Image 1 (tube, helix red, strand yellow):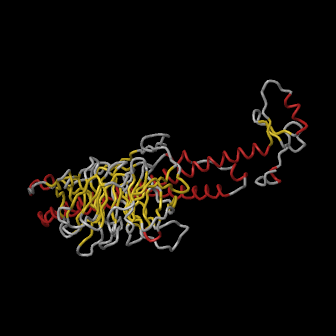
Image 2 (spheres, rainbow, N blue to C red; image 1 turned 90 degrees about the vertical axis):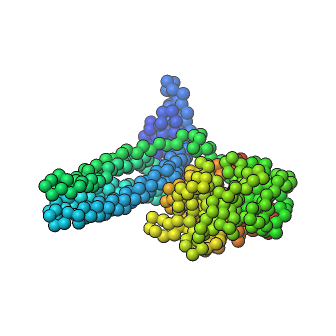
Image 3 (tube, one colour; image 1 turned 45 degrees about the horizontal axis):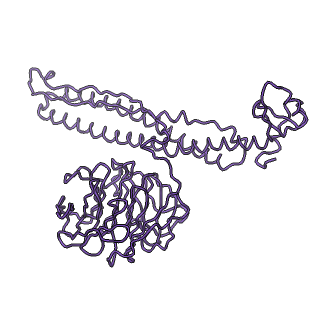
Length: 512
């Protein structure tokens, strides 16, 4: 008998109820001994299928394990992050609630100063109304927070239990597993709050009570969130592609003519832009032939390059603090910075431009989002007010993932920092758990159609592949990679690696 099944699990024949039953009928769901098989087959009303019990138990065991795997994956990849997001929203609501309450109180006090002592009693009454609504507001939020945190705690415990069950060979424990996945799919309700406002009136002593104004009542509602299990093949979730055990070298551009090659960006599946330690940016085909070249307007070395959705080339000029668009033979200055210098660029799926930039006064690096030349968003600190990125002029390449996350390779801090589109910190990746304490200086970074993140490990001559939640998947470290710097991925998920000192660009296949 399979060693996963102990002696206490011995099953008796369902017919004679005496002999050990080494067989099982999949049709009748009946345990049988060898002597009773013929009798069982005498029932001609069914087409029986009798198999060894070990085979049945093994199949059942693996089926259960597959349920465990699916539940664990959904909890870790979908449900738990949703609860984390809800918890973050609640935290923000508490902060906003406090700020709004302080704003109301300030307005109330200003109105009270204008009315002096005659309206002191009225001020006290209105303050009491604010305090009562504030208490209701806070109580509603804390109730929601308590329910969400309780669910998060239970999900964590279920995740731990599932991992333990997946590591056990005890069929008894596995068979007793009861899935709570349906319970957790119902996400916590969102609070929909209509905040009160003070509506001041011109002061008139005789109608003081009427003219003082009123507070719009506090409104607190919950809004149900619906969790939808992604359907296979949906456009937002492309079919999973297996990674190769080792990448394949498709081709390489043996030399790009730079003493130091720094930047590479895909124009198409057949052409790539490059730049290095001089003022010339070159467009190569995969045969290594220069298709066109452009000189920076200032004559400075380009800090970074990126290709827009329409095929235009954008480059950052760190020396003159500008971001420029190359269109044909014309160069247009899009943005001029003051007190900051651009480090790296990324063109997004929506047509925006993301820029990492460093301060002349030692302030932490920040990421700015531009629409054309208009600044739309600043990302610099986490919800605790701590810097997301290190200071200094070191490279901080960035890339937008297909889930709209913003991924920054911070070589100074030795981390890949990933925030949501709203700028909320999702995770920091500092290398795989299997290599604790190993130096990690990520330089280039890119993302692919599977929402996986690829970053160059410059000091260790390899590429890290992690998934969109920061889970390490694979190293790419064959084909003699030497000082890999920048990366880009084409529309077919082929990876282009720029090597600093060799000046080569290598095209690798890493999916099957």
